[in-house]
Length: 119
Image 1 (cartoon, helix red, strand yellow):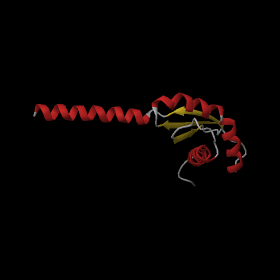
Image 2: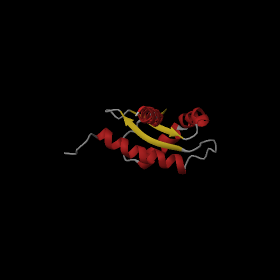
Image 3: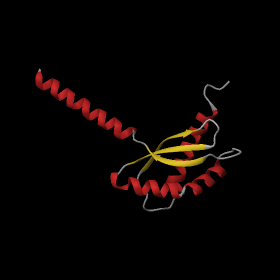
Image 4: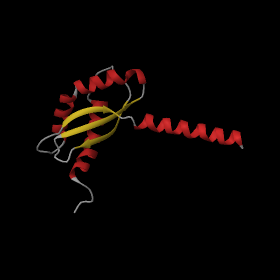
């Protein structure tokens, strides 16, 4: 028996393929530096939530809109690459974990400065 569920294996494969499609097949010059950080696929393999991280703050909304409008193209290209009966519907979302990690790191640095200043 495999160590993890099929939805997790499909998630990992979709993450790799979607990032390759975005970098090599999508020809929109408005797309900045995008990183596909993860894909969550529902257990019934009907829906896939693709989490992306965008480098520039001002490009986040436009890039997300572009990717959501190109999701039918990405899904059809996925159908050619993956050997599955049906390809999950795709929805792009911003990954807030990187910003959350930066915020935590800043708070820890502030606490360390206060501890060093009081010692």
